[in-house]
Length: 240
Image (cartoon, rainbow, N blue to C red; front, side, top):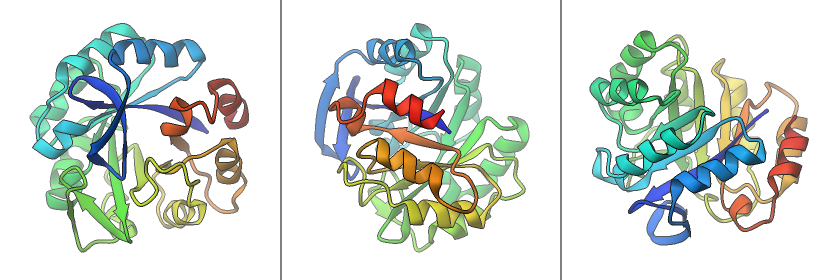
């Protein structure tokens, strides 16, 4: 299982928020590049970066911070937040992003996802952000009428590299993973699933790995990693 330490960007800083609400942001590092170097030195093999301002605005806002991260580490990055066009996608991949995460357009314009996945095989991920059973869009400021499995199945044969399933109701709460919900989606599609939202301890990773059914491919580590409830060494050991 691959672990993805999260760097959520707001106003150029590395923050954690509650349920995606930018007004609840806690700053953990004013230098996202330093945070990325810390994660790389700890032994992580990927970094998960989200431009929170960009997700709401619909275009890149924290591009300077993203570029600083790209220049500071050699491990691959997956990037989401405000990426809404093929030009945006191409620009970030050319800049060195290994995987581009598409969320809002997966609901509003799924053809962009299909076109991108065909053009950049395995370098496109779909973010399926779930609140009270429905998929949220526009930086989680609006809800669609679609459930997660419906959105996920749209891209079964598109060449998408991963589905990042975020449980908004638990995001930032350190309540523990809803393993059953993640597992239901993993069992319903053939695209690898990465779980996000609510991780509280290494026990969540253990439970993800132990569930019957299709294996969960990865997990995003957020607040529990920043507040010390989980250490990189113990997380990586359990995931290995």
